[in-house]
Image (cartoon, rainbow, N blue to C red):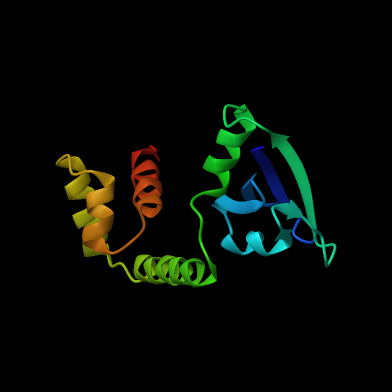
Length: 141
């Protein structure tokens, strides 16, 4: 029988992974790949008491399953998480180094109809930075 189990980290007080357990095999379908280690023969075993488990249901149609897939994101191991964190840090560093000319160039590209995603790629910053800049620019003083 198929079960969808939410793994929560009690220390950080947040959900860590969504796991599908079927025929004695646990597979992480969202969140941290390391959550598979707390399952033995498809059953949750809290060896160090840092994790809690919540059975969400036996059907993939349960609304909480979709919510946690969206919230936790794709399955990642530690190396992937580290790589993403480095990329975010590099983009933040690039955003801090932007000059007035760069900001004018961003404003010009946005006014010409270039998408925020493309502007972010060209300037080497995050899309959220461009979005915040655009919102701040449109606020009247």
